[in-house]
Length: 303
Image (cartoon, rainbow, N blue to C red; front, side, top):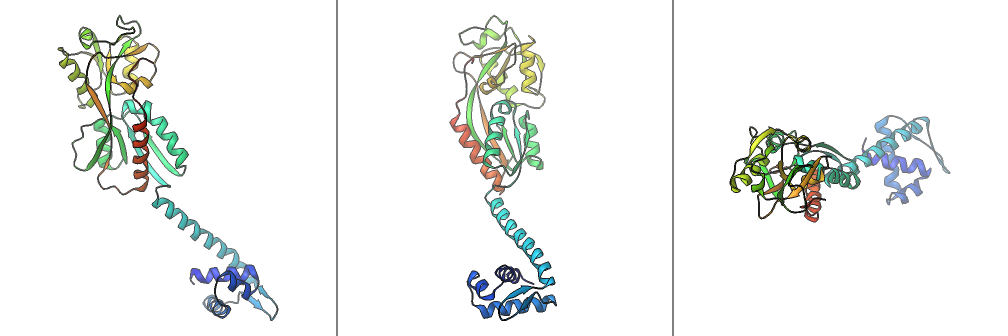
């Protein structure tokens, strides 16, 4: 039994007339009659009771009509779904976000993609340090990551999508809280809350490099892996912290963000995926991220 036989059968069953069914199918009536006879021969049952004036379904034909409609509907739906999958409109994507991108980009990207691609299942992982994202990408746990380069793996395609300056997060009662930018040298005597050093965090290295450029080595009071925890410790008065400007989207009572005076260390935000990954959903995601990040300015003020 072929699908065309079922389509011919449904047309005759719905029209109750071979001539009208042939017109509907854009074919001549004799070949249509021949195809129906072939179908009946394959089934070993008559599906139509024919007279000179009308065509009626037999009990076997009534059963076949219900089944044929379901089969054809499933085939048509499968064809549509396959085409949508090819366009990246259905599927699944696992996405990792570095700490600052968790609070700025994750909500807006998730909202935009769910509106544009409601049938794509998004698995979102926030607060992932770059080394953890790299390992997850290489193992296949993540499909794409928004992370801080550098990334040293030939198996990953990494593209910078913007650069942003560092700002300082201060306790609200810190003497340097005010209207003017803060000089890094003014923080030389403060304890620092930093990202982990033992994971070779990109942000840890960037903050340390900025301090060394200013002529001092930061005195570390606490190392933490999550941006929300880092800013919470600043709010609690444990120390100050250098963070990407986009972290200012994370508001925690007791913590104030101030720009740094003069030129300072910048950090890049990049999108990473496995080299040669053909996933159409991934390609749509990458296009959406580039569009969104390219149009959004990075804040560099206390807002």
